[in-house]
Amino acid sequence: MARPTTILLPLKLAARFASSFHPRALAPQLQRNYARELLSWAFLPTMLAAIEGGTLSIVVGKAFAGQSGVTEGSLNLAIAWITAAPNLANTTSFVWAALSRGRGKVRFISTLQITTAVLIALIALLPRDGTGLLSICILAGLARATWTGVITVRTAVWRNNYPKADRATIAGKMATVQALVLAAASLLVGQAMDLSPRNYQLLFPLLALIGLLGNQIYATVRLTGGKKLMYAERAGRAGAVGLNPAGMLHLLRGDRLYAEFMGWMMLFGFGNLMLGPPIAYVLTQELHTSYLEGILVNSVIPLAVMPFAIPIWARLLDRSHVVEFRAVHGWAFVAASALCTAATVLHSIWIFYLAGVAMGVGYAGGTLAWNLGHHDFAPADRDSDYMAVHVTLNGVRGLIAPIVAWGLYVWLAPLGYSGIVMLICTFVNVAGVIGFIHMRRKIRRGTPALL
Image 1: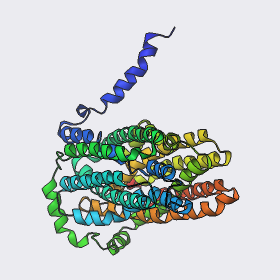
Image 2: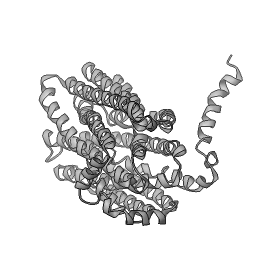
Image 3: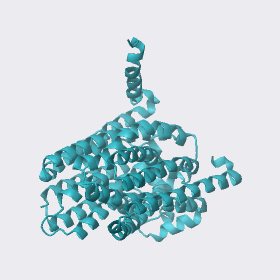
Image 4: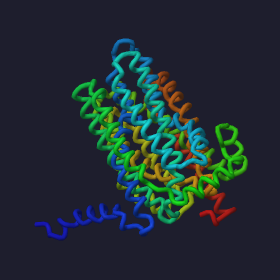
Protein backbone atom coordinates (compact mmCIF):
# COMPACT_ATOMS: atom_id res chain seq x y z
CA MET A 1 0.00 0.00 0.00
CA ALA A 2 1.37 3.42 -0.97
CA ARG A 3 2.28 5.79 1.80
CA PRO A 4 0.11 8.93 2.14
CA THR A 5 3.15 11.14 1.58
CA THR A 6 3.86 9.35 -1.70
CA ILE A 7 0.29 9.87 -2.87
CA LEU A 8 0.26 13.52 -1.84
CA LEU A 9 3.63 14.37 -3.39
CA PRO A 10 2.32 14.92 -6.95
CA LEU A 11 -0.45 17.11 -5.57
CA LYS A 12 2.03 19.16 -3.58
CA LEU A 13 4.27 19.58 -6.61
CA ALA A 14 1.29 20.64 -8.73
CA ALA A 15 0.19 23.13 -6.07
CA ARG A 16 3.71 24.53 -5.83
CA PHE A 17 3.86 24.86 -9.62
CA ALA A 18 0.51 26.67 -9.74
CA SER A 19 1.40 28.98 -6.85
CA SER A 20 4.59 30.06 -8.64
CA PHE A 21 2.35 31.89 -11.13
CA HIS A 22 0.72 34.02 -8.42
CA PRO A 23 1.69 37.72 -8.50
CA ARG A 24 2.76 37.49 -4.85
CA ALA A 25 5.79 35.50 -6.03
CA LEU A 26 7.16 38.76 -7.48
CA ALA A 27 8.26 42.08 -5.99
CA PRO A 28 5.27 44.36 -5.14
CA GLN A 29 6.06 46.89 -7.88
CA LEU A 30 5.82 44.18 -10.55
CA GLN A 31 2.63 42.52 -9.41
CA ARG A 32 -0.10 44.66 -10.99
CA ASN A 33 1.19 44.63 -14.57
CA TYR A 34 2.20 41.00 -14.31
CA ALA A 35 -1.26 39.95 -13.09
CA ARG A 36 -3.04 41.80 -15.89
CA GLU A 37 -0.73 40.57 -18.61
CA LEU A 38 -0.74 36.97 -17.39
CA LEU A 39 -4.54 36.93 -17.28
CA SER A 40 -4.75 38.35 -20.80
CA TRP A 41 -2.55 35.52 -22.11
CA ALA A 42 -5.05 33.03 -20.71
CA PHE A 43 -7.45 34.18 -23.46
CA LEU A 44 -5.43 35.72 -26.32
CA PRO A 45 -3.74 32.49 -27.52
CA THR A 46 -7.12 30.86 -28.12
CA MET A 47 -7.57 32.71 -31.39
CA LEU A 48 -4.04 31.82 -32.48
CA ALA A 49 -5.05 28.16 -32.68
CA ALA A 50 -6.91 29.06 -35.87
CA ILE A 51 -3.78 30.32 -37.65
CA GLU A 52 -1.04 28.33 -35.91
CA GLY A 53 0.96 26.80 -38.76
CA GLY A 54 1.02 23.27 -37.39
CA THR A 55 -2.74 23.22 -36.86
CA LEU A 56 -3.97 25.14 -39.91
CA SER A 57 -1.71 23.17 -42.28
CA ILE A 58 -3.42 19.93 -41.17
CA VAL A 59 -6.88 21.50 -41.40
CA VAL A 60 -6.26 22.81 -44.91
CA GLY A 61 -4.43 19.66 -46.04
CA LYS A 62 -7.42 17.47 -45.19
CA ALA A 63 -10.45 19.76 -45.49
CA PHE A 64 -9.58 21.08 -48.97
CA ALA A 65 -8.20 17.85 -50.48
CA GLY A 66 -10.22 16.86 -53.57
CA GLN A 67 -12.49 19.91 -53.42
CA SER A 68 -13.61 21.84 -56.51
CA GLY A 69 -10.77 23.87 -58.01
CA VAL A 70 -8.15 22.37 -55.68
CA THR A 71 -5.36 20.38 -57.34
CA GLU A 72 -2.73 18.35 -55.53
CA GLY A 73 -0.09 20.88 -56.56
CA SER A 74 -2.06 23.90 -55.35
CA LEU A 75 -2.85 22.14 -52.08
CA ASN A 76 0.81 21.33 -51.45
CA LEU A 77 1.79 24.92 -52.16
CA ALA A 78 -0.95 26.14 -49.82
CA ILE A 79 0.35 23.87 -47.05
CA ALA A 80 3.88 25.20 -47.61
CA TRP A 81 2.59 28.77 -47.47
CA ILE A 82 0.50 28.26 -44.34
CA THR A 83 3.38 26.52 -42.58
CA ALA A 84 5.68 29.36 -43.61
CA ALA A 85 3.22 32.19 -42.89
CA PRO A 86 4.06 32.67 -39.17
CA ASN A 87 7.72 33.13 -40.05
CA LEU A 88 7.25 34.81 -43.43
CA ALA A 89 5.09 37.42 -41.70
CA ASN A 90 8.14 38.32 -39.65
CA THR A 91 9.49 40.25 -42.63
CA THR A 92 7.00 42.95 -41.61
CA SER A 93 8.66 43.35 -38.21
CA PHE A 94 10.71 46.39 -39.17
CA VAL A 95 7.49 48.07 -40.34
CA TRP A 96 5.84 47.59 -36.95
CA ALA A 97 9.00 48.71 -35.14
CA ALA A 98 8.99 51.91 -37.17
CA LEU A 99 5.25 52.56 -36.80
CA SER A 100 5.35 52.00 -33.03
CA ARG A 101 8.37 54.25 -32.50
CA GLY A 102 7.47 57.19 -30.28
CA ARG A 103 3.93 55.85 -29.71
CA GLY A 104 2.20 54.25 -26.74
CA LYS A 105 3.24 50.62 -26.87
CA VAL A 106 0.29 49.00 -25.06
CA ARG A 107 -2.31 50.81 -27.14
CA PHE A 108 -0.44 49.95 -30.33
CA ILE A 109 -0.30 46.26 -29.37
CA SER A 110 -3.98 46.25 -28.41
CA THR A 111 -4.98 47.59 -31.83
CA LEU A 112 -2.99 44.87 -33.57
CA GLN A 113 -4.60 42.19 -31.41
CA ILE A 114 -8.08 43.38 -32.42
CA THR A 115 -7.10 43.39 -36.10
CA THR A 116 -5.79 39.83 -35.81
CA ALA A 117 -9.06 38.65 -34.28
CA VAL A 118 -11.12 40.23 -37.07
CA LEU A 119 -9.00 38.59 -39.78
CA ILE A 120 -9.36 35.19 -38.10
CA ALA A 121 -13.14 35.56 -37.86
CA LEU A 122 -13.32 36.35 -41.59
CA ILE A 123 -11.93 32.89 -42.41
CA ALA A 124 -15.32 31.50 -41.40
CA LEU A 125 -16.86 33.07 -44.52
CA LEU A 126 -14.64 31.12 -46.92
CA PRO A 127 -16.01 28.17 -48.97
CA ARG A 128 -14.18 24.85 -49.37
CA ASP A 129 -13.01 25.30 -52.95
CA GLY A 130 -10.11 26.76 -54.91
CA THR A 131 -11.15 30.35 -54.17
CA GLY A 132 -11.54 29.58 -50.49
CA LEU A 133 -8.09 27.96 -50.41
CA LEU A 134 -6.48 31.07 -51.90
CA SER A 135 -8.44 33.35 -49.59
CA ILE A 136 -7.55 31.39 -46.45
CA CYS A 137 -3.87 31.71 -47.39
CA ILE A 138 -4.27 35.49 -47.74
CA LEU A 139 -6.20 35.99 -44.50
CA ALA A 140 -3.89 33.72 -42.52
CA GLY A 141 -0.88 35.61 -43.88
CA LEU A 142 -2.37 38.99 -42.93
CA ALA A 143 -3.32 37.75 -39.46
CA ARG A 144 0.22 36.44 -38.89
CA ALA A 145 1.60 39.81 -40.06
CA THR A 146 -0.44 41.77 -37.52
CA TRP A 147 0.51 39.28 -34.81
CA THR A 148 4.15 39.82 -35.74
CA GLY A 149 3.62 43.43 -34.70
CA VAL A 150 2.39 42.24 -31.30
CA ILE A 151 5.51 40.11 -30.83
CA THR A 152 7.88 42.83 -32.03
CA VAL A 153 6.55 45.61 -29.83
CA ARG A 154 5.72 43.47 -26.79
CA THR A 155 9.38 42.96 -25.98
CA ALA A 156 9.76 46.69 -25.27
CA VAL A 157 6.94 46.39 -22.73
CA TRP A 158 8.68 43.49 -21.01
CA ARG A 159 12.01 45.27 -20.93
CA ASN A 160 10.53 48.33 -19.23
CA ASN A 161 8.17 46.53 -16.87
CA TYR A 162 10.39 43.70 -15.64
CA PRO A 163 14.07 43.73 -14.52
CA LYS A 164 16.66 41.53 -16.24
CA ALA A 165 16.98 39.19 -13.24
CA ASP A 166 13.26 38.31 -13.43
CA ARG A 167 12.53 38.82 -17.12
CA ALA A 168 13.13 35.32 -18.45
CA THR A 169 11.20 33.77 -15.55
CA ILE A 170 8.24 36.12 -16.10
CA ALA A 171 8.32 35.62 -19.86
CA GLY A 172 8.42 31.88 -19.18
CA LYS A 173 5.27 32.08 -17.05
CA MET A 174 3.44 33.88 -19.83
CA ALA A 175 4.75 31.47 -22.45
CA THR A 176 3.62 28.55 -20.29
CA VAL A 177 0.09 29.91 -20.02
CA GLN A 178 0.06 30.62 -23.75
CA ALA A 179 1.26 27.11 -24.56
CA LEU A 180 -1.36 25.44 -22.37
CA VAL A 181 -4.21 27.54 -23.76
CA LEU A 182 -3.03 27.11 -27.34
CA ALA A 183 -2.68 23.34 -26.84
CA ALA A 184 -6.22 23.10 -25.49
CA ALA A 185 -7.60 25.23 -28.33
CA SER A 186 -5.68 23.21 -30.95
CA LEU A 187 -7.05 19.99 -29.45
CA LEU A 188 -10.55 21.44 -29.75
CA VAL A 189 -9.91 22.30 -33.41
CA GLY A 190 -8.73 18.75 -34.14
CA GLN A 191 -11.72 17.14 -32.47
CA ALA A 192 -14.20 19.52 -34.11
CA MET A 193 -12.73 19.01 -37.58
CA ASP A 194 -12.91 15.22 -37.20
CA LEU A 195 -16.66 15.64 -36.64
CA SER A 196 -17.10 17.77 -39.78
CA PRO A 197 -14.62 19.49 -42.15
CA ARG A 198 -16.96 22.52 -42.22
CA ASN A 199 -16.70 23.15 -38.49
CA TYR A 200 -13.98 25.78 -38.95
CA GLN A 201 -16.78 28.07 -40.13
CA LEU A 202 -18.33 27.92 -36.65
CA LEU A 203 -15.23 27.49 -34.54
CA PHE A 204 -12.95 30.24 -35.84
CA PRO A 205 -15.29 33.16 -34.96
CA LEU A 206 -15.67 31.70 -31.45
CA LEU A 207 -11.89 31.52 -31.03
CA ALA A 208 -11.59 35.11 -32.24
CA LEU A 209 -14.22 36.26 -29.75
CA ILE A 210 -12.34 34.67 -26.84
CA GLY A 211 -9.17 36.37 -28.08
CA LEU A 212 -10.94 39.74 -27.96
CA LEU A 213 -11.72 39.13 -24.30
CA GLY A 214 -8.01 38.77 -23.66
CA ASN A 215 -7.43 41.97 -25.57
CA GLN A 216 -9.72 43.90 -23.24
CA ILE A 217 -7.63 42.74 -20.28
CA TYR A 218 -4.30 43.46 -21.99
CA ALA A 219 -5.39 47.05 -22.71
CA THR A 220 -5.27 47.74 -18.95
CA VAL A 221 -1.51 47.00 -18.72
CA ARG A 222 0.60 50.07 -17.89
CA LEU A 223 4.07 50.64 -19.34
CA THR A 224 6.61 51.68 -16.72
CA GLY A 225 8.46 54.77 -17.89
CA GLY A 226 6.29 54.93 -21.00
CA LYS A 227 6.60 58.68 -21.59
CA LYS A 228 10.35 58.61 -21.03
CA LEU A 229 10.66 55.82 -23.58
CA MET A 230 8.55 57.73 -26.13
CA TYR A 231 10.76 60.81 -25.79
CA ALA A 232 13.94 58.72 -26.06
CA GLU A 233 12.65 57.01 -29.21
CA ARG A 234 11.68 60.28 -30.84
CA ALA A 235 15.04 61.80 -29.99
CA GLY A 236 16.85 58.79 -31.44
CA ARG A 237 14.73 58.49 -34.56
CA ALA A 238 17.68 59.32 -36.81
CA GLY A 239 19.42 56.08 -35.92
CA ALA A 240 16.32 53.92 -36.07
CA VAL A 241 15.81 51.01 -38.44
CA GLY A 242 12.72 52.75 -39.77
CA LEU A 243 10.65 51.67 -42.77
CA ASN A 244 13.79 51.35 -44.89
CA PRO A 245 15.19 47.79 -44.76
CA ALA A 246 18.63 49.31 -45.38
CA GLY A 247 18.43 50.47 -41.77
CA MET A 248 18.78 46.85 -40.71
CA LEU A 249 22.03 46.53 -42.64
CA HIS A 250 23.29 49.70 -40.98
CA LEU A 251 22.49 48.29 -37.55
CA LEU A 252 24.24 45.00 -38.30
CA ARG A 253 27.32 46.79 -39.65
CA GLY A 254 27.47 48.78 -36.43
CA ASP A 255 27.18 45.72 -34.18
CA ARG A 256 29.35 42.96 -35.63
CA LEU A 257 28.75 40.61 -32.69
CA TYR A 258 25.00 40.78 -33.19
CA ALA A 259 25.50 40.37 -36.95
CA GLU A 260 27.44 37.14 -36.41
CA PHE A 261 24.77 35.86 -34.04
CA MET A 262 22.10 36.61 -36.66
CA GLY A 263 24.18 34.74 -39.24
CA TRP A 264 24.26 31.56 -37.19
CA MET A 265 20.57 32.01 -36.36
CA MET A 266 19.89 32.19 -40.10
CA LEU A 267 21.55 28.81 -40.69
CA PHE A 268 20.12 27.10 -37.61
CA GLY A 269 16.62 28.48 -38.16
CA PHE A 270 16.68 27.49 -41.83
CA GLY A 271 16.80 23.83 -40.85
CA ASN A 272 13.93 24.27 -38.40
CA LEU A 273 11.73 26.09 -40.90
CA MET A 274 12.38 23.51 -43.60
CA LEU A 275 10.89 20.85 -41.34
CA GLY A 276 7.29 22.09 -41.16
CA PRO A 277 5.91 21.36 -44.66
CA PRO A 278 7.40 17.83 -44.97
CA ILE A 279 5.88 16.88 -41.61
CA ALA A 280 2.44 18.00 -42.81
CA TYR A 281 2.88 16.20 -46.15
CA VAL A 282 3.98 12.93 -44.57
CA LEU A 283 1.23 12.99 -41.94
CA THR A 284 -1.64 13.81 -44.34
CA GLN A 285 -0.51 12.15 -47.59
CA GLU A 286 1.64 9.18 -46.51
CA LEU A 287 0.38 8.18 -43.05
CA HIS A 288 -3.18 9.46 -43.74
CA THR A 289 -3.66 10.57 -40.15
CA SER A 290 -6.92 11.96 -38.80
CA TYR A 291 -7.20 15.69 -38.05
CA LEU A 292 -6.59 15.00 -34.37
CA GLU A 293 -3.54 12.77 -34.93
CA GLY A 294 -1.90 15.31 -37.22
CA ILE A 295 -2.62 18.22 -34.88
CA LEU A 296 -1.34 16.20 -31.91
CA VAL A 297 2.05 15.85 -33.61
CA ASN A 298 2.26 19.37 -34.99
CA SER A 299 0.71 21.40 -32.17
CA VAL A 300 -0.82 19.77 -29.12
CA ILE A 301 2.09 17.59 -27.94
CA PRO A 302 4.78 20.26 -28.43
CA LEU A 303 2.63 22.87 -26.69
CA ALA A 304 1.76 20.51 -23.82
CA VAL A 305 5.45 19.73 -23.24
CA MET A 306 6.52 23.38 -23.19
CA PRO A 307 5.31 24.20 -19.63
CA PHE A 308 7.54 21.47 -18.20
CA ALA A 309 10.64 22.60 -20.11
CA ILE A 310 10.24 26.38 -19.89
CA PRO A 311 11.31 26.71 -16.21
CA ILE A 312 14.52 24.80 -16.93
CA TRP A 313 15.38 26.95 -19.94
CA ALA A 314 14.40 30.14 -18.08
CA ARG A 315 16.93 29.43 -15.32
CA LEU A 316 19.65 28.88 -17.92
CA LEU A 317 18.78 32.06 -19.84
CA ASP A 318 18.56 34.16 -16.66
CA ARG A 319 22.19 33.38 -15.84
CA SER A 320 23.76 33.19 -19.31
CA HIS A 321 24.26 35.13 -22.50
CA VAL A 322 21.93 34.14 -25.35
CA VAL A 323 24.85 32.79 -27.41
CA GLU A 324 25.75 30.34 -24.65
CA PHE A 325 22.07 29.49 -24.30
CA ARG A 326 21.65 28.70 -28.01
CA ALA A 327 24.77 26.50 -27.99
CA VAL A 328 22.99 24.22 -25.50
CA HIS A 329 19.36 24.67 -26.51
CA GLY A 330 19.90 23.99 -30.21
CA TRP A 331 20.42 20.28 -29.67
CA ALA A 332 16.72 19.89 -28.78
CA PHE A 333 15.77 20.78 -32.36
CA VAL A 334 18.47 18.49 -33.71
CA ALA A 335 16.84 15.65 -31.77
CA ALA A 336 13.40 16.60 -33.11
CA SER A 337 14.65 16.59 -36.71
CA ALA A 338 16.38 13.24 -36.23
CA LEU A 339 13.21 11.70 -34.80
CA CYS A 340 11.15 13.05 -37.72
CA THR A 341 13.61 11.39 -40.07
CA ALA A 342 13.21 8.06 -38.28
CA ALA A 343 9.41 8.41 -38.16
CA THR A 344 9.26 9.08 -41.90
CA VAL A 345 11.52 6.19 -42.85
CA LEU A 346 9.69 3.75 -40.55
CA HIS A 347 6.20 5.20 -41.23
CA SER A 348 5.60 5.41 -37.48
CA ILE A 349 3.09 7.81 -35.95
CA TRP A 350 4.45 6.93 -32.52
CA ILE A 351 7.94 8.16 -33.37
CA PHE A 352 6.30 11.32 -34.69
CA TYR A 353 4.71 11.70 -31.25
CA LEU A 354 8.21 11.45 -29.71
CA ALA A 355 9.40 14.06 -32.22
CA GLY A 356 6.57 16.27 -30.97
CA VAL A 357 7.94 15.96 -27.44
CA ALA A 358 11.41 16.99 -28.63
CA MET A 359 9.93 19.90 -30.56
CA GLY A 360 8.12 21.02 -27.41
CA VAL A 361 11.42 21.07 -25.50
CA GLY A 362 12.96 23.09 -28.32
CA TYR A 363 10.02 25.50 -28.58
CA ALA A 364 10.12 26.07 -24.82
CA GLY A 365 13.65 27.45 -24.95
CA GLY A 366 13.14 29.05 -28.33
CA THR A 367 10.22 31.20 -27.22
CA LEU A 368 12.32 32.65 -24.39
CA ALA A 369 15.41 33.31 -26.51
CA TRP A 370 13.18 34.66 -29.28
CA ASN A 371 11.61 37.32 -27.09
CA LEU A 372 14.54 38.15 -24.82
CA GLY A 373 17.80 37.16 -26.52
CA HIS A 374 18.37 40.47 -28.29
CA HIS A 375 18.39 42.24 -24.90
CA ASP A 376 21.95 40.93 -24.48
CA PHE A 377 22.98 43.12 -27.43
CA ALA A 378 20.54 46.06 -27.63
CA PRO A 379 20.64 49.42 -25.81
CA ALA A 380 17.28 50.23 -24.20
CA ASP A 381 16.20 52.92 -26.68
CA ARG A 382 16.87 50.59 -29.65
CA ASP A 383 15.19 47.49 -28.26
CA SER A 384 12.45 47.40 -30.91
CA ASP A 385 15.01 47.94 -33.67
CA TYR A 386 17.12 44.96 -32.60
CA MET A 387 14.01 42.83 -32.22
CA ALA A 388 12.84 43.96 -35.65
CA VAL A 389 16.12 42.85 -37.23
CA HIS A 390 15.86 39.46 -35.52
CA VAL A 391 12.24 38.90 -36.47
CA THR A 392 12.61 40.22 -40.03
CA LEU A 393 15.58 37.96 -40.77
CA ASN A 394 13.49 35.09 -39.44
CA GLY A 395 10.89 36.08 -41.99
CA VAL A 396 13.47 36.02 -44.79
CA ARG A 397 14.42 32.43 -44.01
CA GLY A 398 10.73 31.72 -43.45
CA LEU A 399 10.14 32.68 -47.10
CA ILE A 400 12.94 30.56 -48.52
CA ALA A 401 13.16 27.47 -46.28
CA PRO A 402 9.61 26.07 -46.81
CA ILE A 403 9.92 26.54 -50.58
CA VAL A 404 13.21 24.65 -50.55
CA ALA A 405 11.58 21.89 -48.47
CA TRP A 406 8.58 21.78 -50.81
CA GLY A 407 10.87 21.46 -53.85
CA LEU A 408 12.89 18.69 -52.22
CA TYR A 409 9.75 16.82 -51.23
CA VAL A 410 8.17 17.07 -54.69
CA TRP A 411 11.44 15.75 -56.15
CA LEU A 412 12.30 13.02 -53.64
CA ALA A 413 8.96 11.78 -52.26
CA PRO A 414 7.76 10.16 -55.53
CA LEU A 415 11.04 8.22 -55.51
CA GLY A 416 10.35 6.97 -51.99
CA TYR A 417 12.95 9.22 -50.35
CA SER A 418 10.85 11.44 -48.08
CA GLY A 419 13.21 10.64 -45.22
CA ILE A 420 16.08 12.30 -47.11
CA VAL A 421 14.24 15.64 -46.86
CA MET A 422 14.04 15.25 -43.08
CA LEU A 423 17.70 14.21 -42.92
CA ILE A 424 18.78 17.36 -44.76
CA CYS A 425 16.91 19.44 -42.16
CA THR A 426 18.81 17.62 -39.43
CA PHE A 427 22.20 18.29 -41.02
CA VAL A 428 21.41 22.02 -41.38
CA ASN A 429 20.37 22.19 -37.70
CA VAL A 430 23.60 20.51 -36.62
CA ALA A 431 25.65 23.00 -38.63
CA GLY A 432 23.85 25.89 -36.91
CA VAL A 433 24.48 24.53 -33.42
CA ILE A 434 28.16 24.05 -34.22
CA GLY A 435 28.21 27.72 -35.23
CA PHE A 436 26.80 28.78 -31.84
CA ILE A 437 29.44 26.67 -30.09
CA HIS A 438 32.18 28.34 -32.17
CA MET A 439 30.81 31.79 -31.34
CA ARG A 440 30.57 30.94 -27.65
CA ARG A 441 34.24 29.97 -27.57
CA LYS A 442 35.23 33.15 -29.38
CA ILE A 443 33.25 35.35 -27.00
CA ARG A 444 34.71 33.63 -23.96
CA ARG A 445 38.23 34.21 -25.27
CA GLY A 446 37.68 37.82 -26.28
CA THR A 447 34.99 39.33 -24.03
CA PRO A 448 34.27 37.02 -21.07
CA ALA A 449 32.21 39.72 -19.34
CA LEU A 450 29.39 39.02 -21.81
CA LEU A 451 28.88 35.58 -20.33
